[in-house]
Image 1 (tube, rainbow, N blue to C red):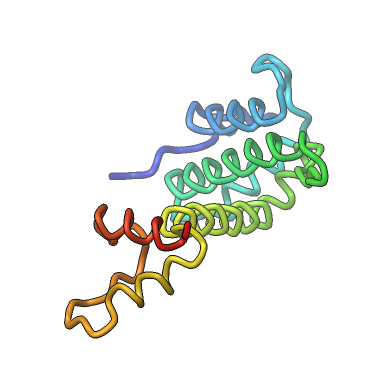
Image 2: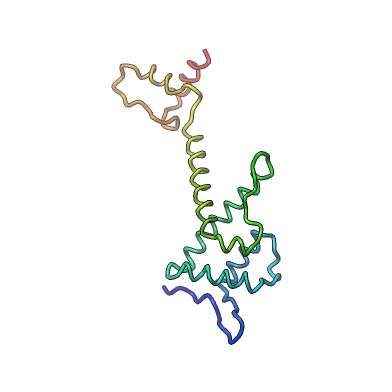
Length: 165
């Protein structure tokens, strides 16, 4: 499958093709800009430069990176409403486009941290559960569960009873 052309080139102006109009629309949404708001020549040039940086990897990589940045910016917005979180999002589209690779890196790190927190929360049982499990399985030839999610319900109930009293 061939990659879609991203720009129509005229004698004096550059008109974005539909694939890039979609990217521009997504960036507008991040910044709360109306779709009808025209971009400056500087912003359009930076968008064109960004697309050229993606080169042969094309639209699919740009779309996936932009999706990750959209999720990052949305999450930061929600968190920035609660102190002491700070809002580190770029304030202007031209700055955002100039630093897009850095924003993708930050978004990727944020996604990894979020995933680690989610998976640790799913595997964390009550405080001290590993010690209680070791006592229950002491002398047993059965393999000791390493995560709370792999402990059967009967053993979980026993662990909770042990930890209460």
